Amino acid sequence: MTFGYDFSDTEEYGDFVTLTPGRYIFALAKAEKGESGAGNPKAIITLRVVAGNQAYIGGTIQQHWLTSGKSAFRFRALLRALGIDLKDRGKVALEKYYDKEFGARVTLQEGSELTEAGEVIFFHELNAILPAAQYEDLLDDAEDDDEDEADEADEADEAEDFEDDEEEVDDEEDEDEEGITIEDLDDMNLTELKQLAEEWEVSTKPDKGKKKLGVAQMRRRLAEVIEEEEDEEDVEEDVEEDDDEEESFTEEDLAEMNLAELRDVAEANDVKLPKPKKGKKLSAVRVRKILAEALFNDEDEDDDEEPF
Image (tube, rainbow, N blue to C red; front, side, top):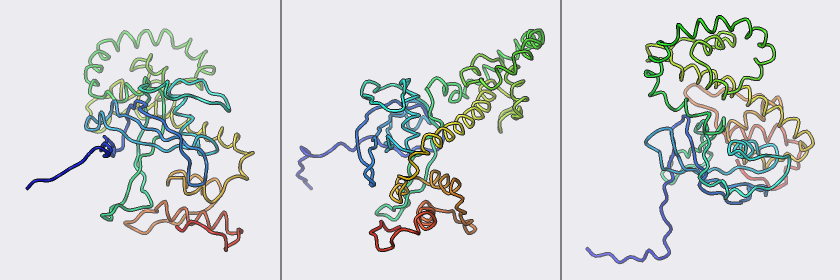
């Protein structure tokens, strides 16, 4: 059977993928301006997978991030990870940073719409957005065994040196403990990492399926503690910076938020969310409805509102 065709106006299919949760390194592939449903400026960011799950390397994902207001923290984190010197307000030409890499932890969030086949749509959520160099060890668990052998060969000598320097470390501990960064972990050997883990009450047992604790495993655990503290500091900064903007928070802003952000809004406003029934989970659609009723129930019920 013969078919006629004309692809002169047909767009390319593209290489968009749905990633599995985990850590990835991305390259900035494209950035465009857009506008949210509430009329706020946003950036439409296309990212290419550079490292992580081997099945997705070379594929792309797209993110829609607000560029101002309380929900612009991911766009700010992206600019920081790209090494851009930020001010409170300004402009940046992102095309200058195409192909520049950064790392992020990816999770999947349930969307409020279904596909034509009735399947749930999931969206990527990027957290712990940091320079790519801070993710290299975390993505390279395959080299754990080689690192462990080298570390064990030097561990006795390093332990002796560490004991000689222990008094100096104790004197400097009060000044340096709060200032430890993920980059500092790269300069520590296994003995030092274990010492820091004990101080921070972090487990030093091997990962499940591993016979012994490696440098990469220990750095990963300590890096997660630092990331959590940085995320908490970012939230505190956001609260301070957005005190003047709280009155501009509207019901339409809820439509731009994913499930994790909606839960944060509920917690910040003391809105109690119900526990889902056994075997089910609380969806973003339901949380939006609860927040809308709790935070905007004083508004005129006759106003046109987007249905949930």
